[in-house]
Length: 327
Image (cartoon, rainbow, N blue to C red; front, side, top):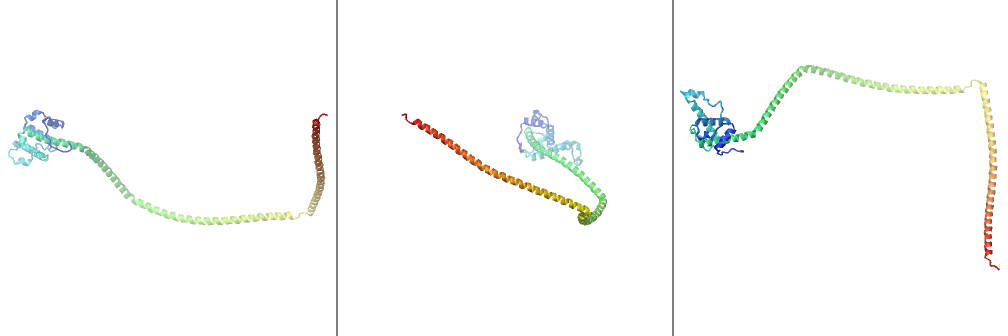
């Protein structure tokens, strides 16, 4: 049922809906001869089901109203009926019931009118139940969100408490932090001074290193000059004649060696000249022999040609003799 309407229900439908909704267990006989107590009890159950009437309010009458009556015990039932009647009129008016609900419908109910009023209330009950079923997931989700909200609020409270604790600890430790910061500042200034001293020391060390390099170069040059001087001194000392006799003997030995070398050179030249002459003789003989060999080869070729010519001539002569006619 998407929207509330007002169809008239049959008696069996009314009984079935009351039983399914667990409002009341009634039979068809209750509607054939409707009694005021039955219908009042049924209307009361329906109003309680619709949350239009609380069970605690049922049967209670205002104490100020009872004080105005001489015998309130005799009229308590009447007050309950009037209270129920007023609530039913409000409900019927809100349901836009085409029939007007009156007090007679409670005291002397008519079956047709009663079924009409019950149809309106039960139709609204069905409509409400349908809407509640549609809204139930949303309500459950809202309940879940509300639980989550409470959890987050608890966590936020816990975090706020922790933040407050940290803030208090920070306030307590603030003097110590300030003292440490001042010491750190002093140490940084000291480090800056030490860094400047280190830079100056590095500059001095670099200058000393350059001077040391220059000194090393000068020392190396002096050592090289000293070595050269020592070598020159040794050469000069080697040139100094220690003994004239030894020098004379050395000169004579060198002269003898020179004379021997010259004699060997002359003998080698003489031997070379002799061999050169021999080679020239052999060369001349070779040339003559080559000429004779060429001449002999030419004679041999002429002889071969003559032999070949003679043989061919004889063959021609024999063939010519064979060709002569017989006489």
